[in-house]
Image 1 (cartoon, helix red, strand yellow):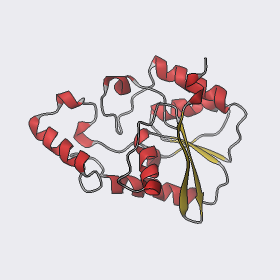
Image 2 (cartoon, one colour):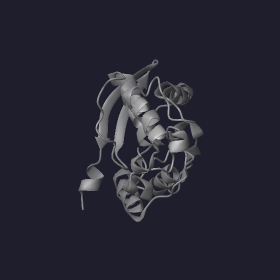
Image 3 (tube, helix red, strand yellow):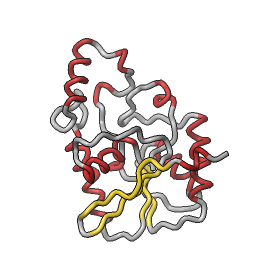
Image 4 (cartoon, one colour):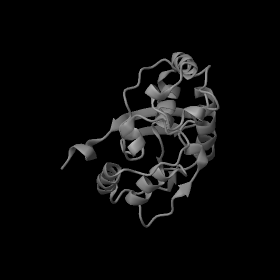
Length: 189
């Protein structure tokens, strides 16, 4: 599950590891998600340790143990965190364009590339592999990384909406994509 909206999402700022809280809309999205997940049972509930993911998780499961795990954090965007694209210097824009061209090879100054991000997530997957049913509250970059692992690194991924649910099955070391970006709870009144 991707976290609810933050003001940085709305403003188009890179968040990465910055600990930005949910906006009012993000809290509303989290409440709608909670209604959808009400009565759902999971063996383990995980969350990124960043407030935007943890608040989304706690809103959905207020009386459950939530395991915080830094490996579920968004990709580190290094010195680009907190900035909008219009704020990049000419040199930063060159670095950004190289990163966008090949995020598996290139990284933003001080940040992670796509391989490093997936290695972090894969370490978490290996650890929870024997669990039956798990829900993780995380970030768009993490979800996209998992999708690319299944579909191939060159696949085109549409936006992963705030509080959308993407489902995966992990059996015997094989990751399978079940559904992407399910946000029906946001479409209901």
